[in-house]
Length: 202
Image 1 (tube, one colour):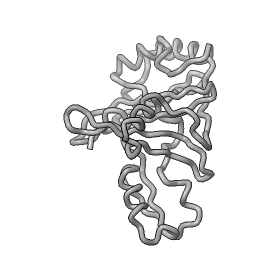
Image 2 (spheres, rainbow, N blue to C red):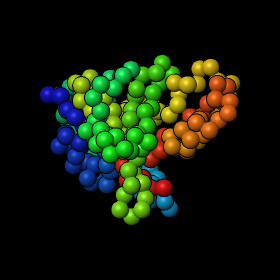
Image 3 (cartoon, helix red, strand yellow):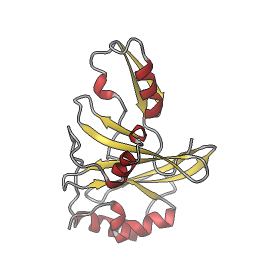
Image 4 (cartoon, rainbow, N blue to C red):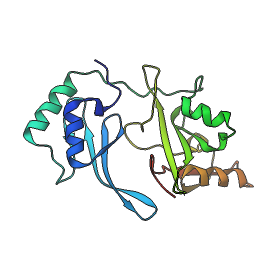
C-alpha cells in the first residue's frame, strides 16, 4: 500500500495526537508554539521508512506505540519527491490563485540545477496575517501540500552559480524584491531562508 502522508498510519496518528504534533512533510511532524507573530518549533519528530523514530527528550513514544509504528512503516510503500524542470499542471489551489491574478504570491523553489523542489503559495488569512503553503510533486505524479524531506530549500538557488555576492533574506518575497531591484543583478543574487509554512504569520 502506498501512503500519502505519515498521518495515514493509525499508530502514528495516535502518537502525534497524544504529543500535540502536526505533520509537516512525508515523514516529519512538529510540535510548535506561537512566538509573537511567528511559530516556533519546540520538537521535530522524524520517522524512518523502517519505522525508526528520532525525537527530542520528552516526546518519546511508548513501547507499544513504537512497535506499532515500526510494523506499519515497514508494511507500506513510500513515494519520493520528483524534481520538475517545467510545471505542466499546477496544484489546483495555486492555479486558482494564478487565475485570480495572484501570480506574485507563488514562489518556485529550485535547486542549483534549476529543477523545481517545492512551490510556496502566500495567502492572506482572516486575522490579517499571512500563511505560506508548501506544495511538492511526487513520483506518483501527485501534488501534495507538504514540505520535501531533508534540508529545506532556498529560493533563488538556481541563480547562484555565476554570482560573486549572495544576499540572504528571510522569506522568498523579500529575496525576489531585492533581486529585481538590484542594479548589478549579474553579479549579485538574493536567496531566501525558508519561511514558516501553513499558519505562519508575519
